[in-house]
Amino acid sequence: MSRLDKLREGIKHLGIDGFIVTNPYNRRYLTGFDGTAGIALISETEAKFITDFRYSDQAQKQVTDFEIIICGSSESLLKNVSNQLTHMNIKYLGFESTDVSFDLYSQLKNNLNLELKPTKNVIEELRMIKSEDEIQRIKKAAEITDKTFNHLLKLIKPGITELDLSHEIEYFMRKKGATSNASARIIAASGYRSAYPHGGASEKVIENGDMITFDYGALYQGYSSDMTRTVSVGEPNSKLKEIYQIVYDALNLSLTTVRSGMGCREVDAVARDFISSKGYGKYFGHGGGHGIGLDIHEDPYFSKNSKQTLAPGMVVTIEPGIYIPELGGVRIEDDVLIKSDGIEILTHSPKNLIMI
Image 1 (cartoon, helix red, strand yellow):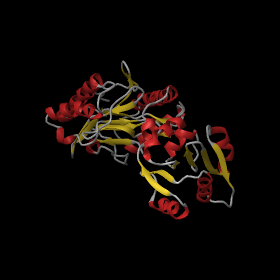
Image 2 (cartoon, one colour; image 1 turned 90 degrees about the vertical axis):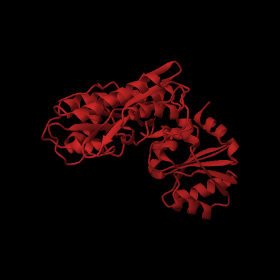
Image 3 (cartoon, one colour; image 1 turned 30 degrees about the horizontal axis):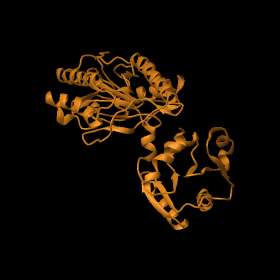
Image 4 (cartoon, one colour; image 1 turned 30 degrees about the vertical axis):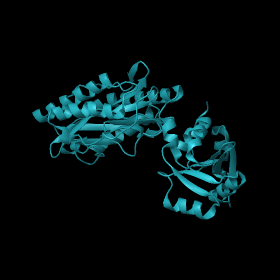
Protein backbone atom coordinates (compact mmCIF):
# COMPACT_ATOMS: atom_id res chain seq x y z
CA MET A 1 0.00 0.00 0.00
CA SER A 2 1.36 3.44 -0.93
CA ARG A 3 1.90 6.16 1.65
CA LEU A 4 -0.98 8.08 0.12
CA ASP A 5 -3.31 5.09 0.46
CA LYS A 6 -2.21 4.58 4.06
CA LEU A 7 -3.02 8.21 4.81
CA ARG A 8 -6.48 7.85 3.28
CA GLU A 9 -7.11 4.78 5.42
CA GLY A 10 -5.92 6.67 8.50
CA ILE A 11 -8.22 9.66 8.12
CA LYS A 12 -11.44 7.77 7.41
CA HIS A 13 -12.51 7.92 11.07
CA LEU A 14 -11.70 11.63 11.51
CA GLY A 15 -14.91 13.00 10.04
CA ILE A 16 -13.14 14.81 7.20
CA ASP A 17 -13.27 14.49 3.43
CA GLY A 18 -10.03 16.33 2.75
CA PHE A 19 -6.60 16.88 4.25
CA ILE A 20 -4.06 19.68 3.82
CA VAL A 21 -0.39 18.99 4.46
CA THR A 22 1.85 21.93 5.34
CA ASN A 23 4.52 20.38 7.60
CA PRO A 24 7.70 20.14 5.47
CA TYR A 25 8.70 16.70 6.80
CA ASN A 26 5.22 15.28 6.22
CA ARG A 27 5.06 16.93 2.81
CA ARG A 28 8.33 15.28 1.81
CA TYR A 29 7.23 11.93 3.22
CA LEU A 30 4.06 11.92 1.13
CA THR A 31 5.25 13.54 -2.08
CA GLY A 32 9.04 13.18 -2.26
CA PHE A 33 9.40 16.96 -2.67
CA ASP A 34 12.24 18.54 -0.66
CA GLY A 35 11.82 22.17 -1.72
CA THR A 36 10.79 24.90 0.69
CA ALA A 37 7.39 25.90 -0.69
CA GLY A 38 4.47 23.61 -1.38
CA ILE A 39 1.15 22.33 -0.06
CA ALA A 40 -0.39 18.91 -0.55
CA LEU A 41 -4.18 18.42 -0.77
CA ILE A 42 -5.72 14.97 -0.43
CA SER A 43 -9.29 13.75 -0.82
CA GLU A 44 -10.67 10.24 -1.20
CA THR A 45 -10.19 10.33 -4.97
CA GLU A 46 -7.72 13.15 -5.66
CA ALA A 47 -4.24 14.20 -4.59
CA LYS A 48 -2.78 17.53 -5.63
CA PHE A 49 0.58 19.15 -4.96
CA ILE A 50 0.72 22.92 -5.33
CA THR A 51 3.95 24.90 -5.52
CA ASP A 52 5.20 27.99 -7.32
CA PHE A 53 7.05 28.47 -10.57
CA ARG A 54 10.48 28.39 -8.86
CA TYR A 55 10.03 24.66 -8.22
CA SER A 56 8.35 23.62 -11.48
CA ASP A 57 11.17 21.39 -12.74
CA GLN A 58 12.00 20.07 -9.28
CA ALA A 59 8.41 19.08 -8.59
CA GLN A 60 8.15 17.26 -11.92
CA LYS A 61 11.22 15.19 -11.04
CA GLN A 62 10.44 14.48 -7.39
CA VAL A 63 6.69 14.31 -6.87
CA THR A 64 4.85 11.04 -7.47
CA ASP A 65 1.20 10.00 -7.01
CA PHE A 66 0.07 13.66 -7.03
CA GLU A 67 -1.24 15.99 -9.70
CA ILE A 68 1.27 18.84 -9.83
CA ILE A 69 -0.10 22.39 -10.00
CA ILE A 70 2.26 25.31 -10.52
CA CYS A 71 1.25 28.81 -9.44
CA GLY A 72 2.06 31.64 -11.78
CA SER A 73 4.29 34.52 -10.68
CA SER A 74 1.32 36.75 -9.87
CA GLU A 75 -0.81 34.02 -8.27
CA SER A 76 -0.57 33.34 -4.56
CA LEU A 77 -0.18 29.81 -3.25
CA LEU A 78 -3.08 30.28 -0.86
CA LYS A 79 -5.38 31.51 -3.63
CA ASN A 80 -4.57 28.44 -5.68
CA VAL A 81 -5.18 26.19 -2.66
CA SER A 82 -8.61 27.80 -2.22
CA ASN A 83 -9.48 27.23 -5.87
CA GLN A 84 -8.38 23.60 -5.82
CA LEU A 85 -10.28 22.81 -2.62
CA THR A 86 -13.42 24.26 -4.20
CA HIS A 87 -12.94 22.10 -7.31
CA MET A 88 -12.34 19.04 -5.11
CA ASN A 89 -15.68 19.72 -3.38
CA ILE A 90 -14.19 19.36 0.10
CA LYS A 91 -16.48 20.35 2.95
CA TYR A 92 -14.54 19.21 6.03
CA LEU A 93 -10.80 19.88 5.81
CA GLY A 94 -8.36 18.34 8.27
CA PHE A 95 -5.22 20.35 9.00
CA GLU A 96 -2.05 19.75 11.03
CA SER A 97 -2.76 21.56 14.27
CA THR A 98 0.83 21.48 15.53
CA ASP A 99 2.18 23.01 12.32
CA VAL A 100 -0.33 25.59 11.10
CA SER A 101 0.27 29.06 12.50
CA PHE A 102 -2.58 31.23 13.72
CA ASP A 103 -1.99 33.52 10.75
CA LEU A 104 -2.32 30.67 8.24
CA TYR A 105 -5.34 29.28 10.08
CA SER A 106 -7.00 32.69 9.90
CA GLN A 107 -6.33 32.97 6.19
CA LEU A 108 -7.73 29.51 5.52
CA LYS A 109 -10.79 30.19 7.65
CA ASN A 110 -11.50 33.52 6.02
CA ASN A 111 -10.89 32.41 2.43
CA LEU A 112 -12.43 28.96 2.33
CA ASN A 113 -16.10 28.03 2.40
CA LEU A 114 -15.62 24.85 4.42
CA GLU A 115 -15.15 23.62 7.99
CA LEU A 116 -11.62 23.32 9.34
CA LYS A 117 -10.90 20.38 11.63
CA PRO A 118 -7.64 20.13 13.60
CA THR A 119 -5.74 16.84 13.53
CA LYS A 120 -2.59 15.69 15.29
CA ASN A 121 0.10 13.11 14.45
CA VAL A 122 -1.80 11.62 11.50
CA ILE A 123 1.20 11.40 9.17
CA GLU A 124 3.72 11.28 12.02
CA GLU A 125 2.26 7.92 13.05
CA LEU A 126 2.83 6.58 9.54
CA ARG A 127 6.40 7.86 9.59
CA MET A 128 7.27 5.82 12.68
CA ILE A 129 7.63 2.60 10.66
CA LYS A 130 10.53 2.96 8.25
CA SER A 131 10.80 1.36 4.83
CA GLU A 132 13.98 -0.48 3.86
CA ASP A 133 15.10 2.53 1.82
CA GLU A 134 14.62 4.84 4.80
CA ILE A 135 16.54 2.45 7.06
CA GLN A 136 19.47 2.37 4.65
CA ARG A 137 19.65 6.16 4.57
CA ILE A 138 19.61 6.34 8.37
CA LYS A 139 22.36 3.71 8.50
CA LYS A 140 24.48 5.80 6.13
CA ALA A 141 23.87 8.89 8.28
CA ALA A 142 24.97 6.89 11.35
CA GLU A 143 28.08 5.71 9.51
CA ILE A 144 29.04 9.32 8.75
CA THR A 145 28.45 10.19 12.41
CA ASP A 146 30.78 7.40 13.54
CA LYS A 147 33.51 8.42 11.10
CA THR A 148 33.24 11.98 12.37
CA PHE A 149 33.67 10.91 15.99
CA ASN A 150 36.79 8.93 15.10
CA HIS A 151 38.17 12.02 13.36
CA LEU A 152 37.21 14.22 16.29
CA LEU A 153 39.21 12.17 18.78
CA LYS A 154 42.41 13.16 16.94
CA LEU A 155 41.70 16.88 17.40
CA ILE A 156 40.62 17.21 21.04
CA LYS A 157 43.22 18.87 23.25
CA PRO A 158 43.45 21.61 25.87
CA GLY A 159 43.50 25.13 24.46
CA ILE A 160 41.02 24.81 21.62
CA THR A 161 37.41 25.94 21.97
CA GLU A 162 34.10 24.14 21.84
CA LEU A 163 33.32 26.10 18.68
CA ASP A 164 36.53 24.84 17.06
CA LEU A 165 35.32 21.29 17.57
CA SER A 166 31.75 22.06 16.54
CA HIS A 167 32.88 23.62 13.27
CA GLU A 168 35.12 20.65 12.56
CA ILE A 169 32.23 18.23 13.14
CA GLU A 170 30.08 20.11 10.62
CA TYR A 171 32.86 20.37 8.05
CA PHE A 172 33.92 16.73 8.30
CA MET A 173 30.36 15.38 8.07
CA ARG A 174 29.78 17.38 4.92
CA LYS A 175 33.03 16.05 3.43
CA LYS A 176 31.79 12.52 4.07
CA GLY A 177 28.51 13.06 2.24
CA ALA A 178 26.14 14.69 4.73
CA THR A 179 24.02 17.63 3.67
CA SER A 180 24.48 19.21 7.09
CA ASN A 181 24.15 18.55 10.78
CA ALA A 182 20.76 16.95 11.42
CA SER A 183 19.75 19.31 14.24
CA ALA A 184 19.63 23.07 14.54
CA ARG A 185 23.00 23.14 16.30
CA ILE A 186 25.80 20.83 17.37
CA ILE A 187 26.22 20.24 21.10
CA ALA A 188 29.81 20.47 22.26
CA ALA A 189 29.73 21.24 25.99
CA SER A 190 32.84 20.97 28.16
CA GLY A 191 33.66 21.22 31.86
CA TYR A 192 30.86 22.75 33.89
CA ARG A 193 28.93 23.30 30.65
CA SER A 194 28.61 19.54 30.12
CA ALA A 195 25.91 19.78 32.80
CA TYR A 196 23.80 21.65 30.22
CA PRO A 197 21.86 18.87 28.42
CA HIS A 198 21.52 21.03 25.29
CA GLY A 199 24.61 23.16 25.68
CA GLY A 200 25.45 24.36 22.19
CA ALA A 201 29.09 25.04 21.43
CA SER A 202 30.53 28.24 22.89
CA GLU A 203 33.85 30.04 22.96
CA LYS A 204 34.81 28.22 26.18
CA VAL A 205 38.36 26.87 26.00
CA ILE A 206 38.86 23.15 26.59
CA GLU A 207 40.83 22.52 29.79
CA ASN A 208 42.60 19.52 31.25
CA GLY A 209 40.16 17.48 33.36
CA ASP A 210 37.09 18.57 31.36
CA MET A 211 34.39 16.18 30.37
CA ILE A 212 33.12 17.06 26.87
CA THR A 213 29.69 15.96 25.68
CA PHE A 214 29.21 15.83 21.91
CA ASP A 215 25.69 15.42 20.55
CA TYR A 216 25.28 15.64 16.77
CA GLY A 217 23.99 13.74 13.78
CA ALA A 218 24.40 13.68 10.03
CA LEU A 219 21.62 14.55 7.62
CA TYR A 220 21.97 12.19 4.66
CA GLN A 221 19.54 12.28 1.72
CA GLY A 222 16.90 13.74 4.03
CA TYR A 223 17.37 11.28 6.91
CA SER A 224 18.99 11.84 10.29
CA SER A 225 21.26 10.11 12.75
CA ASP A 226 21.65 11.29 16.34
CA MET A 227 24.55 10.24 18.56
CA THR A 228 25.98 11.42 21.86
CA ARG A 229 29.37 10.57 23.28
CA THR A 230 31.14 12.01 26.32
CA VAL A 231 34.94 11.99 26.58
CA SER A 232 37.43 13.28 29.12
CA VAL A 233 40.46 15.48 28.52
CA GLY A 234 42.93 13.92 30.91
CA GLU A 235 41.85 12.31 34.17
CA PRO A 236 38.38 13.44 35.34
CA ASN A 237 37.55 13.74 39.02
CA SER A 238 36.17 10.73 40.82
CA LYS A 239 32.54 11.94 40.84
CA LEU A 240 32.51 12.38 37.07
CA LYS A 241 34.02 8.92 36.61
CA GLU A 242 31.30 7.53 38.86
CA ILE A 243 28.43 9.08 36.93
CA TYR A 244 30.02 8.04 33.62
CA GLN A 245 29.95 4.41 34.71
CA ILE A 246 26.34 4.71 35.86
CA VAL A 247 25.20 6.21 32.53
CA TYR A 248 27.22 3.61 30.63
CA ASP A 249 25.59 0.79 32.59
CA ALA A 250 22.13 2.35 32.20
CA LEU A 251 22.54 2.48 28.42
CA ASN A 252 23.77 -1.10 28.19
CA LEU A 253 20.91 -2.30 30.41
CA SER A 254 18.45 -0.54 28.11
CA LEU A 255 20.04 -2.02 24.98
CA THR A 256 19.77 -5.54 26.36
CA THR A 257 16.14 -4.99 27.41
CA VAL A 258 14.49 -3.06 24.57
CA ARG A 259 12.43 -5.10 22.11
CA SER A 260 9.46 -4.92 19.78
CA GLY A 261 6.14 -4.81 21.65
CA MET A 262 7.65 -3.00 24.62
CA GLY A 263 5.94 0.20 25.71
CA CYS A 264 8.00 3.37 25.32
CA ARG A 265 7.19 4.15 28.93
CA GLU A 266 8.79 0.83 29.92
CA VAL A 267 11.91 1.58 27.88
CA ASP A 268 12.24 4.96 29.55
CA ALA A 269 11.89 3.36 32.98
CA VAL A 270 14.77 0.92 32.47
CA ALA A 271 17.50 3.56 32.49
CA ARG A 272 15.59 5.96 34.71
CA ASP A 273 15.02 3.41 37.48
CA PHE A 274 18.63 2.25 37.32
CA ILE A 275 19.97 5.79 37.60
CA SER A 276 17.54 6.50 40.45
CA SER A 277 18.73 3.37 42.28
CA LYS A 278 22.23 4.86 42.24
CA GLY A 279 21.00 8.09 43.83
CA TYR A 280 21.04 10.32 40.74
CA GLY A 281 17.42 10.22 39.62
CA LYS A 282 16.87 13.95 40.06
CA TYR A 283 19.78 14.64 37.70
CA PHE A 284 18.16 12.80 34.77
CA GLY A 285 15.41 15.16 33.68
CA HIS A 286 14.83 14.57 29.99
CA GLY A 287 13.14 11.76 28.08
CA GLY A 288 15.05 8.54 27.57
CA GLY A 289 14.94 8.59 23.78
CA HIS A 290 12.93 9.32 20.64
CA GLY A 291 12.40 8.31 17.08
CA ILE A 292 14.61 9.54 14.24
CA GLY A 293 13.99 9.73 10.52
CA LEU A 294 13.20 12.73 8.35
CA ASP A 295 13.37 14.76 11.57
CA ILE A 296 16.00 14.24 14.24
CA HIS A 297 13.28 14.22 16.92
CA GLU A 298 10.08 12.45 15.94
CA ASP A 299 7.64 9.83 17.18
CA PRO A 300 7.83 7.63 19.14
CA TYR A 301 9.04 9.36 22.31
CA PHE A 302 10.26 7.70 25.50
CA SER A 303 8.93 9.31 28.66
CA LYS A 304 7.11 8.52 31.89
CA ASN A 305 3.80 9.40 30.24
CA SER A 306 4.22 7.80 26.81
CA LYS A 307 1.46 5.50 25.57
CA GLN A 308 3.31 4.43 22.42
CA THR A 309 4.60 0.92 21.75
CA LEU A 310 7.69 -0.18 19.83
CA ALA A 311 7.23 -2.08 16.57
CA PRO A 312 9.54 -3.52 13.91
CA GLY A 313 10.81 -0.86 11.53
CA MET A 314 11.06 1.91 14.10
CA VAL A 315 14.43 3.63 14.52
CA VAL A 316 14.92 5.21 17.93
CA THR A 317 17.57 6.65 20.18
CA ILE A 318 18.33 5.54 23.71
CA GLU A 319 20.07 8.29 25.67
CA PRO A 320 20.39 8.24 29.46
CA GLY A 321 22.25 11.10 31.13
CA ILE A 322 23.24 12.61 34.45
CA TYR A 323 23.88 16.35 34.82
CA ILE A 324 25.24 17.89 38.01
CA PRO A 325 25.24 21.71 38.07
CA GLU A 326 28.64 23.39 38.42
CA LEU A 327 30.40 20.03 38.06
CA GLY A 328 29.54 18.50 34.72
CA GLY A 329 27.48 15.87 33.02
CA VAL A 330 27.48 12.68 30.98
CA ARG A 331 25.15 11.48 28.23
CA ILE A 332 25.67 8.48 25.93
CA GLU A 333 23.28 7.90 23.05
CA ASP A 334 22.89 5.20 20.43
CA ASP A 335 20.60 4.82 17.43
CA VAL A 336 18.69 1.53 17.39
CA LEU A 337 16.62 -0.25 14.74
CA ILE A 338 13.75 -2.24 16.23
CA LYS A 339 13.37 -5.64 14.53
CA SER A 340 10.93 -8.49 14.97
CA ASP A 341 13.69 -10.67 16.43
CA GLY A 342 15.65 -8.09 18.45
CA ILE A 343 17.46 -4.85 17.73
CA GLU A 344 20.30 -3.58 15.58
CA ILE A 345 22.54 -0.87 17.01
CA LEU A 346 23.35 1.57 14.21
CA THR A 347 25.95 3.78 15.94
CA HIS A 348 29.23 2.00 16.62
CA SER A 349 31.52 4.62 18.15
CA PRO A 350 33.18 3.43 21.39
CA LYS A 351 31.16 3.99 24.56
CA ASN A 352 33.78 3.22 27.19
CA LEU A 353 35.28 6.26 28.90
CA ILE A 354 37.94 7.71 26.59
CA MET A 355 40.57 9.84 28.34
CA ILE A 356 42.52 11.96 25.87
